[in-house]
Length: 541
Image (tube, rainbow, N blue to C red; front, side, top):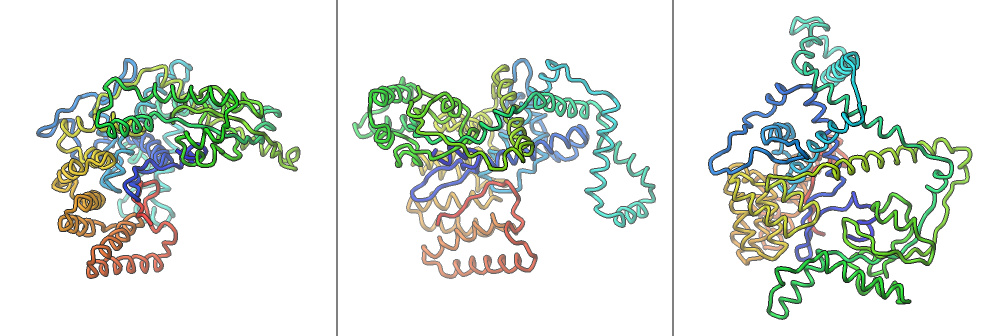
């Protein structure tokens, strides 16, 4: 996890280490970005209605393809559910053909989570007795109409040319647009109800003068982290060394808790906290520094950690603190105030900044409470595997994805992720077999990152000629005019050089030079047209 994982969790990439390289699945920040995209998508669905969704879904159908064994329901939320048909329609609007195959799992999972959240929010609308009038719906329709026109026609000249060409008045065009895209009154009502619900929840948040002053307090602490996943790995390594197997009854979470309890007892009996952290903590960022997290403010850590720190006085050690990362033991060293000199003068501006942060936190906590209130069961094995992966339950994710690829011969994203999990477990032949299915599939073969990963695995297996063919296939398919594609060509450049194929390396360098030239000519600058928020595979340095 590291200090960045604790303090900047949402910037931490979910990644797997392979030798000296890391395969990046993307960061939670990118997942949040796709959450924003989904808010837009859901809004578009509200606006365009079911007919618009069908138009965008193309050939999407709820009819199973040959060999598919998929449930008609992908998830259950309390007594409600999400049908596969509705999920597929929503997913179709994202256009998964864009971006690397290795990043599709995030977008698929985020689509499901957004739909789950929508169900929960509409249930909360009833509890909170949120209502929306017809006049509000009509005002929203007009707002969406104006936005749609402004987006399509950035200047009046373009709009006039279009109207003249179609022989329409502006009012006729707006009415036509309203009928085609914004005719679903109930969808608009639902969207407004959710918007009002959020405003209601956030409107309850206040920040007193004392709370505002406290927000400038910083904390300096040490911590020890024991992660269940690491305990399982240690048990597997010990069993392997003893030429035995880990008992089927082994409970990694219980083992982590037992170890944390033992360390807490040592720490509270006068043990050197820093030495205990250095010898035992699974946090690679702070563990090597005796568990030192440096200075931080509330909100920079996970909520459970923050709450524990606030309850401590300098010099005190916490009890066992459970978070999504595992079990923590915390020792608060000192606190300090960073109250700005102009606090009194700029108090209201500071208050608004803090208020906004607390409003976002209040909404997150409200949604968490809703999820805790209504049991959520993911019925679809592929999506369940992605949720396991997001929760870092890698072994469970592998089992679910193994089932997913049996259920659906067309589940290419599931095969890609399964191959990455296999490689993490050093099951390279299984990884190669699964990826071979991907690159031999009409849809899967289009993704350069699938060919790249297969090439890496074949290299590990000592099949250099086959690896070379996979790398060449990756080069042929890396055709985008963006930095994602450039990273692939940079990686290929290094690989071809290492393999002694100077001719292929030169072709990669030519592509990179041409890309760089085009970026300069177009003024592409920093991101150079890279789709924002898309997960990337960054070549190792």
